[in-house]
Image (cartoon, rainbow, N blue to C red; front, top):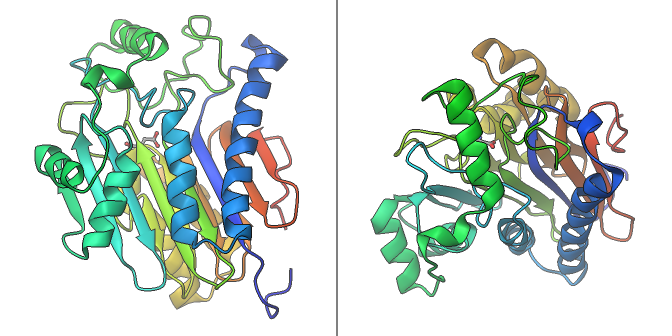
Length: 336
Ligand code: ASP
């Protein structure tokens, strides 16, 4: 790909970052994650190949991730300290900075579609709680019973965290003493940042980003992380880059991490790779910002940096085979 030629449409995904359980799981369990990411990349890739907008591609990719109980968004979302679900999501369009977000919703099957409905309204940008639910339901979003999001695995995860950490939210544990309890996924479910996200460049040269999450296990009721906040966990600007983050939300909010990647490219002239690396490896760690991000720039370059042991990630250019990876020592095809 040459920066001067017409960009080829491309999509990238993440399914959260965190601590490894590689020793504890089978190849078949790992394959399930890789196959799921590949299938969702292929769905996004097919949409982009048909000429869909980047906004449509990232919305659909995140909707599919929300439907998948492997990831902490929609079905399979983590529990609050009161054993309920409060979901956050955001979408942003790079051509005009149009944005829509919802936070703390409890009965919307696909929070990303609610965020998309907020974007379509033009204003406001962010709606919370019951007001967001009423707004989305009035625009055709599907309601589900609050327990629809729950899974036995996530409930066991909440109980495990509460037993080991009292009332502290499960942001990051080394969890050596906990590794045996839930050995079914490549990243430790109790310390993983399991948010999902997608970024894309379409054939028209437009960028978009989408992020959706259940937040962090054992979070305080009412706590909102970076995911639904424009510039913190999600950002897209056709001048620069589309970004979706995953990690300890409080640090990503304080760093305005997603926007900072764009600002470093825009104002300091950094390349995508340098800007993304600077934010994830230099700026977030002093704030306790474990996690990572996915980013696609206006030329279709892709960066997937993270400062944890692993991040579920993948990307696919139209016309090329998708690449997926989980572990840090695994080539994902984006390194310069
Ligand atoms: N960033 C999310 C939050 O703090 C968590 C995650 O990435 O899994 O809500």
